Length: 570
Image (cartoon, rainbow, N blue to C red; front, top):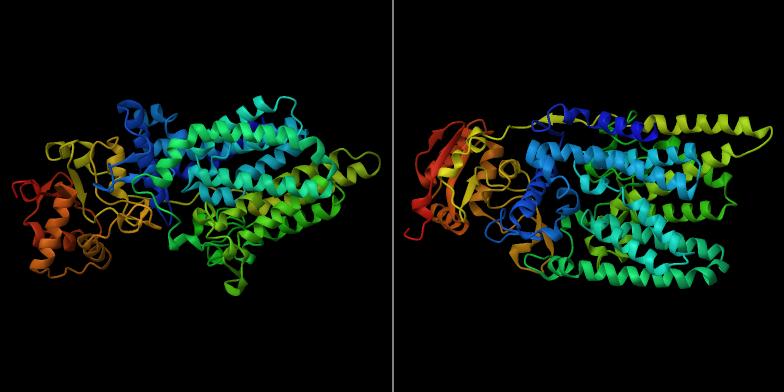
């Protein structure tokens, strides 16, 4: 019944997308879902065509994209290949979101009920918050790789087992397998798990130093086995990520300083019963990164639980861990209601290896898990009381949970409609133009704010290449440089993006025409395509016609056959 409840809740949350997976997308931002669908189509090519899994030239052609540095979710996409083939990447996307929410809650329920608190009602409460916290709901519309945390409770459990293991080699090997799979779901969440476990175990040992004498040997042996085995299995993929083609070092400046406002911890999340998007403006970097948002009631309850159970070593260790990462999640500048107060401790850590690729606001995800386990401890403690206090404690606990969790109860994710994939693509009319090493160039050119062409390609299992797209790559396409969103800057791409947003048709000169033709040749373009119902389609058509001549309408797109302009003879 608990597992069924989690699944029904996940379906409720994603119901707006399930109503029309191909035609609906998250409100406000649509780039990340299109990118994920592209990666799901890449998994199909890996399985069916034996394509190299860690790098692709199917977008950002000819430079390509380092997929190990872009969270290509191979551990999710490959098992979903049958669904992607039968129903398309849009259905696979919403299925992954549903599985991520329900699966994370179910996994935490199993580990909490069997191994950590060993009390089913308490485990159900803690697991519910692990799977459906405001932070998880915030990421659900955009980041299935982040909400797919169903391996994390088992990683936590196996590390704790190592502290008292009689067979540390075997247990270390089991942990290594979990680590390897999680690395192909999301490396950032794996790093968070390792950091959180380190801080938690340190907090326990500071309070009970005698535990170290019995724990250090099996823990050391098990972690060494895990490091060797996982390191061997991940050595080549990590080499591709950090030293392979189109590798970058450090995140884009656009996200490196993402941090939580202090007030974000006491405001309810936007996708919750008591949430309000307008009230949350400037408390988080954007609506897909609301990584705290517990609300006043849960924040007060969490403090109350720590005070009530303060004599419990584990409760104190959980509280210290949650507080530590809550502070780190504030980022480089600590603020209160969008007013800067002081420099944050993250400013001292942001340039360290590995940490320079972390989005600091997401440390709030660790705090969410510690709060969830505190809730489970509180429920168990109330239920095991004896005597006169028992009924009173249970009543107060149930009332406190309703008071704390009702305002942040999950609501269906907000969605909006998006343009369908053009019939020119779905009817395979593009095939008469585009060869194996040629590209289909959309108008506007694919970029962070224009990811519909990535969905077009994904709907064909990436049978054609596109220039540009939405991804992380080194600046100016130079391997090893700091990261940025998108590839090399495109002159004509910027012109067309400006026309698409303003509706003004510029007058282009010969220099701009030559530059556009040079870019088409660099992309080895075969055809330029503009949907007839694209925003500001008429100014865009007139702009492109200044560059390559008159367009021809074919089905629901304007088409320019540019093969004679980009071929070797030209």
